[in-house]
Each structure stands twice: as C-alpha cells, then as structure tokens.
Image (tube, rainbow, N blue to C red; front, side, top):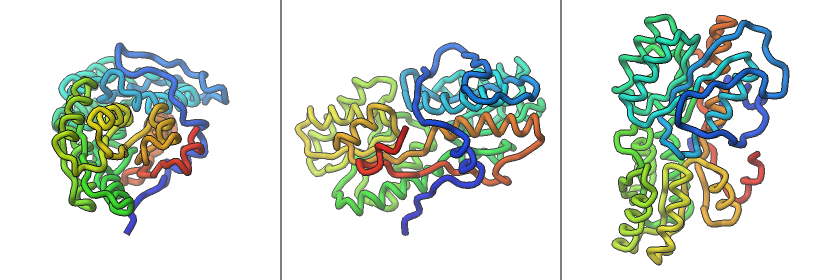
Length: 323
C-alpha cells in the first residue's frame, strides 16, 4: 500500500496562504534579522514580536534557503522580527537555543535532528515561558520535550515511499548515501527505504566536504557494479552523485530526497529520476506563523499531532508545477 502523505490540517491552510516556493536567501552565518513588511501584502497589526529560528543547517546547504524563505514570508506577514541562526553541531545548536532565551525572544522554532543534544536547552526554554515549536527533525521526540507543535515529514514513512517507488521502477540494488552521522532523520529515511526495498546498502559521507562525497560514492560504484540506483538524502548530494556516476563509468540512476533549483532542473532534464519533497517552505512558514498564532491569539496548531508536509514525489511529469 502506498503510504505517501499530502499536506494535512494547518499545513494545508498554509499552502493556501503562501505564494511561491522559490528560495532566495542564504543559510548559516551570523544571526540575521528580517523586518516585517517584506512580503508585499497586508501586515498584521498585532504588537511586534521576535522569533528565533535555529536549524542544524550546514553552510552552503541550499535546502535550508527554502525553509528560511518560508519563515521570512510568514514573519513579514505577522509583524515578526525573525532571527535566523544555524549550526550542524548538536551541542552548538543547543547553545543557540540558550542564547535566544537569554535575548528574551517571544518564540523559538527549532529543528531537533539531534534530540539528545537539544533536550535540556529546549526544556529550559519552555520552563522560562518561551513557546517552542519544532520543524524538519525530531518527529519522535518533540512531544516528550513538551514542544507545542511539529511541522515536517515522517522520515520513516518517506523512506518507505521511496522504497516502494524503487520497487516499482524495477531497481536491483540501491546505495543510500547518508551525509551526516548521528542524524536520526537521515537514518530513518534509509531504514524506511530498506524496509520496502531490502536490496539497499548504506554508505556514510562527509556532507560538509563535497570532494569527499564525490570520491566516496565514486569508489563504491567502481567496487560494486550491481548498484543501479544512488539514493541521496539531500539535493546538493544528488548533483554530486551525478558526477560520481559519470566518473565511475556506472549506469546507475540518481534519485533523491529534497529539492533545490539545480535538482529541479536536473529532474526536468531527465538526469535525476525523481525526488521525495517534504515542502520545506511550508515547514518554515508554518513554524513562524504558529508561534504568532500562539503568542498573539492564544491558538494552538495540530491538536497534539504532527503536521505532515510530505512526502510528495516530484518527477519530470510534474516538476514544472513547482514555483
């Protein structure tokens, strides 16, 4: 049975409210504040508030541009000052949460890719009276921490959907490329894929070093000629995997999780077969908007259940529908 999910509940409402899915900002670096009013539409007349968004984005990973753009558009609509920071190291990301509390922000949106490292500081934020929502990572842990809401994808279900699609495609053996060890969401993607497509082998690469990513995948493809699919867990790694396939003289096809501008073009050109899209723009938008609703209107989102924004498949047949 195909368990692919579409937008549910509040996320569906967000999809109506937002305009466009294009990414235009950079991720990482020093804290960046986004002033309200940049969205071009009506701005809420509620009191000014500040939201900190703290992700585990690695420098140069363009996936996070889409998350951030959604957050910026919601902030512009809601009269919110957005402070965006990121660090792929769990302990350092936790420190950013503590710093946001010290700055007395009105709300925190945070990814929980490494929940053990984040737990104490997230709970401290809640104890200090700062509302916290989670996005993108931490589906299995957000409730236990007392976080108000979660916006993202069930990575295990997304992996299962990928495995079902590989079976439908007639694949023989898949290499699942994990770019960050210890990331629970990435592990869940590969585990879900393997559950539905047992001929799946994991390989670890250093995601912050594309030279390492390319050489590691190339070496594996040269060693094992039976691999006919390379499944990457992020769009930038799919583009690098294409180089590895060529360098190795392999006939393997590349499929991926997540999208960026380059990956969308590669799907359109038939270089990448498909992508599993979790709609990161919606994740960023809903995270900020839900905090505004909570602080200014006393509202809650999701009814204690995760708001799922994916998975959805993007292929050559529908890629032009994405904005």
